[in-house]
Length: 168
Ligand SMILES: [Zn+2]
Image (cartoon, rainbow, N blue to C red; front, side):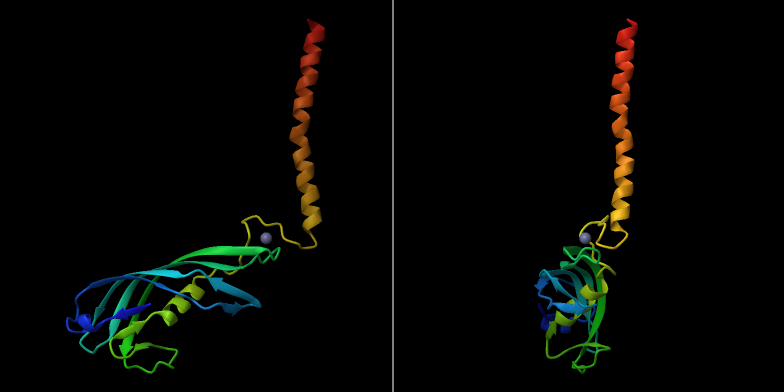
């Protein structure tokens, strides 16, 4: 997504709305590849007398990776606010600042930075994924035991019913 700020540069301090889409390249994180749906960026921007452009808004996308427990595909919805100031003609190779040249502000670096920062610490295919750990079978046995208990109630109720019939 490219923001044309030529008009805004002539009107420092004035608010402009913007909305657009930005593709985000896949990134390797902790041995897994995280890919992103096309991100939607929405917000406002204004310029200052020194030519800097301040942007303020929200980024939404969906990140795709693999479940930390069972390695099945997992996704995470991302909805994060962003706020940055782009320096005019700043050094584009300087990781510490956002920069732009001429009158075009590019959002690729901003979108990547904010999307990665908003990633969950662990992807899970579902909230209670039991995973493939060695304690897993023990957990399952325990839950099965618990589920057997309520199953006895209908039988007990039937027994009571039969007892009643005998009494009548
Ligand atoms: Zn899982």
